[in-house]
Length: 231
Ligand SMILES: C[S@@+](CC[C@H](N)C(=O)[O-])C[C@H]1O[C@@H](n2cnc3c(N)ncnc32)[C@H](O)[C@@H]1O
Image 1 (cartoon, rainbow, N blue to C red):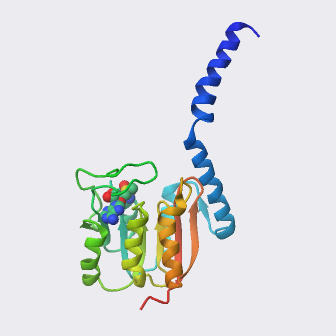
Image 2 (image 1 turned 135 degrees about the horizontal axis):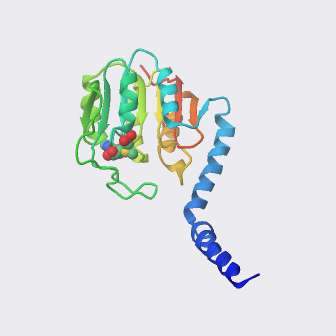
């Protein structure tokens, strides 16, 4: 092989194979998470429709919501998902966020990631509840009776998702739809929104079914089938 070619192939090997493949841990972390997610799909979600485009998954999920009940989003951030969801909702949708970002490290993101300097622009039917969930939820629940029709969980953290299900579990009537934004398909997904939901399900003897999942992202939607704790 001529010297130039050997040098070029060595350069390419070092530049791409070594730098971007063989020593890139993120790749292996993602591949491992992907394989674990695939096993989970095969065991639990085979019959549910899947989507490649996030927006189409959200639209399909919203088409499955019943008419009666509260509509809630936890984790409004920049308002991207709220700008998709709110126009599809009849009446008010409540958006909960401290806007201070995540309060723990999560999936490679530092504390404070996703904080917002100003309130996001959202449609007129959005009502904000600004503060940490454990501070805003008690007053909200006192002043808003009735069951939940739709819950969007986009707060990333296990602890925040635990707060949501501790407070709202008894309001999740049969037929309620929950859309998770970070359910699976990322490093250690089993320790975050997924874990908090599974703990709630076991604790409350809740039955549910998967109604949609993403094959390119982390989103999964479920429908509550029965909930003995729901009054
Ligand atoms: C990934 S961002 C949400 C992204 C948003 N849905 C969008 O489409 O732009 C996660 C948000 O959850 C909020 N959050 C997480 N835990 C929280 C808690 N316990 N109380 C209040 N806000 C929380 C953070 O402030 C952050 O804005």
